[in-house]
Amino acid sequence: MRETQLNIAVTRFAAFVSNLPVSPDELDVFEYHDIIKLFEEACRQDLSQFRIAPDRVEPAADRTTMASIAGTWQTPHPKKNCIEVVYFRSQVRALITCLMAVLGSRPC
Image 1 (spheres, rainbow, N blue to C red):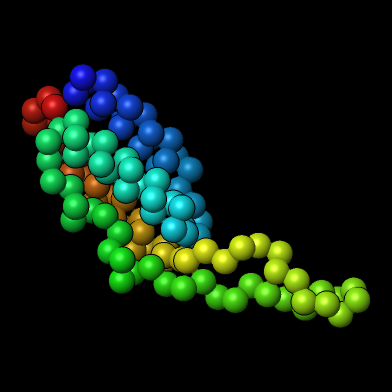
Image 2: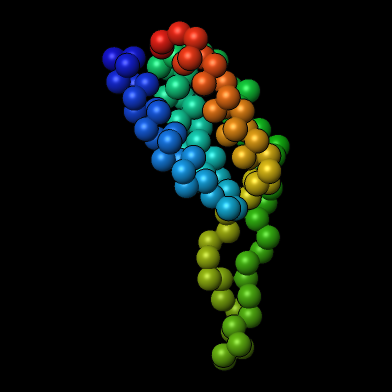
């Protein structure tokens, strides 16, 4: 069971890392936290220090724009909260380093 969980976690994390978002939002954070939870369950490790801190999530800028045609207000995309990309990527890199050490020193 733990080996299966670990394989799922590694596969999801590899796909996530290979497609890291340029502008991470709350959906990316939810996915990242789900992956961390899989690793925690498979390896029985507390990896909470690699989670994105709630106070690092910033409200999205208002994306409402005035359309050039007809002069009406439009919202082309729903607003999503943003996360500073440097912080987000540093958390992901730190998790990679930790997992390499944990998985390299002992099997989960």
